[in-house]
Amino acid sequence: MRGMHRPLGISTSLLDKKFKPALLAEVAARGITHIELFLAAGISYFDSDEGVAELIAEAERQGITFWSVHAPFGSVDLSNPDEIARREALQAVVRALDVAQMINCKPVVIHAGMSTGEPDEVEHRRRQSIRSINELCKLSSQRGLGLAVEYLPTNVPRIGNTSADIIDLFRVVDGAPGVCMDANHANLGEPLAEAIRALADRIVTVHISDNDGINERHFMPGQGTIDWGEFMSLLDEIGYEGPLMYEASNAGDNILERLDMVVASARKYLGNG
Image (spheres, rainbow, N blue to C red):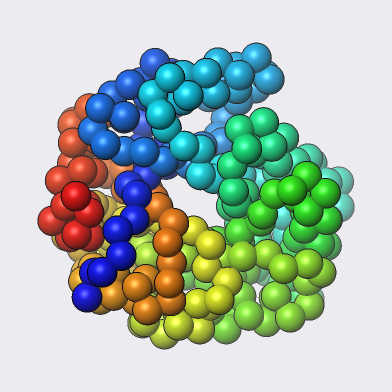
């Protein structure tokens, strides 16, 4: 069953680091109405308020809605056992909150962090992650924003890579963060149906991409193992009404071809359009 129409969205990670605000015209021309701003090093328009203002103006001209901001991750690790490094990571994510407030979006998507090392370090990292999430919950609430902890892949140890781990994390954090249900990640940790039903009342946004059932791949739907008919039925079941946010980036020889593939994929596999 695919009874609920949802808008089509893309992460700007699909547009790579050459993305400029003028490219939003091509996005809008294809009926893609929502975007997630992916913050990463080397994308200059996030570095200044003036650059973000230019982006806002172009989105308004094109009728595009800012849905979410994806905070930086990887070297920005909210679970870093070194307190100075954790504070630096936290400040990088606070910049994501700044941008989200400027563009008046909904959730700010974060990674809870890594879970590596000896047992004592793993436990310390979890405490550091909880400290970071607590601080971000407070700051996001003060700004009228939402926070979404992303379901992460299992290829390396991470905090929040099963529904049970996310639920355990939420039992001890202050505030009420939501979940970014990443299909490409969740089907590696457990059956998608189990993950979505377990986290149903917390899911505030989704990431759409596929994989080979073994590793995180960011394939277009239909290129991997995920049953997208079941996935869409599950979204109906839990009443998710947000956009179908594509985070697939391995297809297409250029940006425009990739955008066309997103639209074709959404029509074929997600019943969109």
